Image (tube, one colour):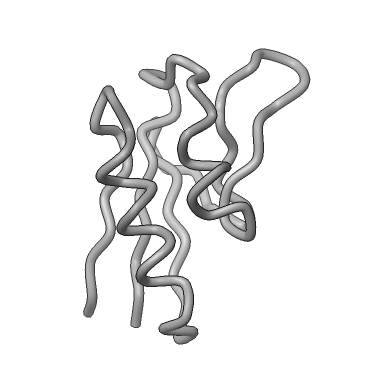
Amino acid sequence: MVIITLQRNKCIGCNYCVEMAPNQFQMSKKDGKTVLLHGKEKKGFFTFKSNDFNILEPCENASKACPVNIINVKLN
């Protein structure tokens, strides 16, 4: 299982995650910060779990590209 975690409140709106993984991230029109699509919020962290391993590489690239290191990708 691929687990993606986003600490949204620290997002600076650079859009790199959307460029790297557009199927998992999009920019909010309200505040210009990223949104983890289908993510569940808990205490300021948004988490999405998937059995689709095709999302692993794009999400890892998004994590590496993020200048504020708010995206975490792991396998479980």
